[in-house]
Length: 106
Image (cartoon, rainbow, N blue to C red):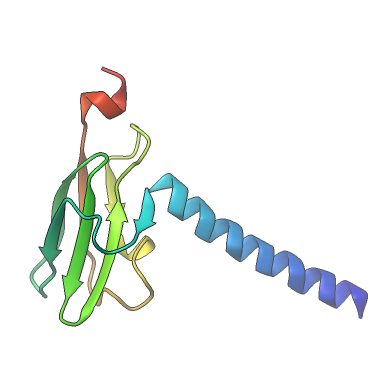
């Protein structure tokens, strides 16, 4: 019984660590109202250009989420489905992150 509980606890910790890793590696979730700009997502939206460090609010109908692209300099593209709330996107949308010298060390 204890080993089953321990295994379940490890599985939960692994899932939590994956969520934290995505949140820190690809930027971080931000509350609404902090966005530098708003991007309306349509069925034809397949890519978005963003600046490193920029906060974007994504809108799809009545659904919204805001994301800060404070990413390491080696990250130049993010599949937004990996950072958006579950079910936000019904198709692939990639964010292409522009290098900004102030964030990338020169």
